[in-house]
Length: 375
Image (cartoon, rainbow, N blue to C red):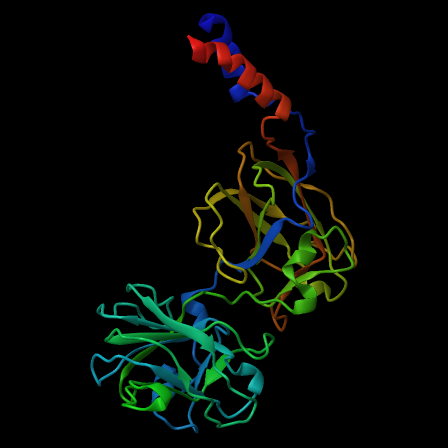
């Protein structure tokens, strides 16, 4: 009996009985899609001239720390005060555009020696999250916000502060006049940060990727050309996509549709990567938390302007491997000078969906397995 059933069981386990048509649409509304910009990171955490991270420590609202990396930028500081156990924090707004104000923060501590360099991710050390919350800043200029208390009983020699959100996502940058850390609740005890302390600008997320709420990343696979995905990060921005049902797919073609306006924003080239790692990258990140394999690259077909909301010819993807997720980025666009964003009306991913074994196959497997188990 074993000699008869074993080959049948092997066939059931290795060849899905469910069939699926080739070159079907792989992703659509309801599937997971994230905005990314793979060339963010160290170069994104760039302060303005004379507006570096040290200005956040001088307790002088006339100076400020400004970072063009926008949200998720921040600073690492090693207080000359020495090791401290902090229990409250306060921020002060800077001189202009209130849209640049951070609206939330994360505070980390470490006792490692700081080896992260300026304008990096600031992740070379082992960091412990102390607290996170809202800055409480209002639009008034040069204005200290509320003192934010938190529970902490651990002393640290260095701190990292990052700002995940800004008041206006369309702003060029993040800015803050001052950051204060106190050893007691309610701003009591000692303010441990001071002018002259070691401080570096960082971007703990690498997130130059940023889109307008009306031009969000979901629009890229919503099945319509009337809505678009626009990313202010320009070249090398794009998407990560995976199916909600978790099924792997074999990508075979990509088809692009132009958006509604400004032809200069059209992407001209593409690169597509695949992974079978769980997707850990977040929206508006570098999309680099997974191990990605470059599958293929090519052109969108928009070398000359085909018109607005126009679908180009399908672009073949040389690929025979099934992946759980794909990362598609656009290395170039029609015009870079004076154009601060890249846009696409629709991206059609087509190929083969690798099915799970059908219910019939699973039922047959269980029936045929019984005699084997009784031997």
